[in-house]
Image 1 (tube, rainbow over the protein chains, first blue to last red):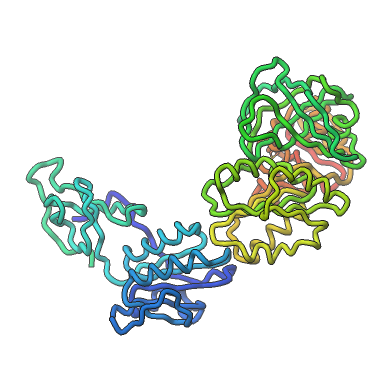
Image 2: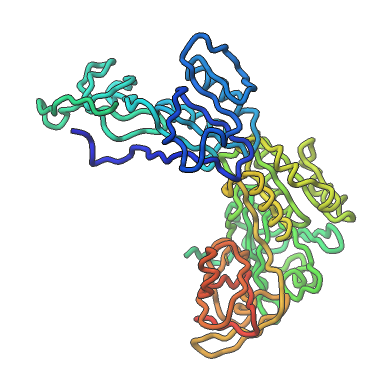
Length: 193
Length: 315
Ligand code: FES
């Protein structure tokens, strides 16, 4: 069982470099960028710079990378460098992100905080489909949820993971599964991989 | 459709600023408070005193939120037989005229990280009301006023209360590199331009070429430029109305006693939309889509004209 009635899941289209942009930065939370992330006839080579997450301590921390390709230790390091970069950028800049939904919407939040609008950044979902789930009863964020039902790490409520995604909170909503019909619970299935 | 009774306003003061510019101070004729205009708002004056009524839109240059008076600046356009000549020649202190309540089709964008203001000539007027509002809000701004060489001191005077390192007056278009200016703006900037159509088109095109999203470029469309005279025919009555070279279709219709609703009188708001049943319009508005313009079945009479001698309207 999943939540077919509610469709506020973001949709993602493959990326293509915006021909009117002047500077193009691509960020990804993995080194393995799938071909499907790029629109037909386009590729990674179209972008001026590419920042990825290596997920390894051999990556040298750098607040202001200058090479065309740069690997970060973690998504957090990448996001810190991105915020500094955006604060110095000019109109005409374009930002592209590839990765898990939580990463994509962290990037989107950084872009919006820097004054960018929807026309100036683009997102593509790749990698794990695990969800960040907000318990609407106690506001705990449950990370990496892959099942339709999850026990909230904060209040212990049996949460049903809805398809309702909040861009502001960067999380899916989790609500008490048997709130309306006590005792009535669907089977647990792993559906968000 | 938005309609308001015109306000009755009394001309409290007329101050000549130059040979062609006058500042008007208007107060409510009954001494009461006036409706508030926000930064960038305009009012249309309704001038009945001539042989035909004129309606001209002017930006408020008084402090945004001011309720005691409206201030506006009127340029006498060369060869004008319309409202600006009437104001310059026939309006005196104490005259009572009609005015619409303030409307704002050129508002400050609240989410902007920085406001880049570009004025050309008398296009400075809406930006004059922006300055105090932006300063009060502690907003980041940069203003560039482009002026004819001989009017530089005039605009410097008008801007004097707001003079600072981020306010500049340039003698002539060539004195300002618009592309370089637009290229060095930080993320999150909005640009506002008011002035001759050629300047506004130039800013729009230069910004687009530099990758500015269209939603960050704002223009104030005032004052229909003239063109060749032509004739309007009203399909329902068969009546014919001449449109003079320095008169808009809307002015001509109003002068002939044919009411057409209007708001911005600058081709931006869509209020004056009128159906065409014959002839080919020459579109000058920013309201109709390219497809609608190509079809030619609709026209915005406040700015657009006719490609041939005759245009037939469904009126
Ligand atoms: S009055 Fe606004 S478009 Fe004509």
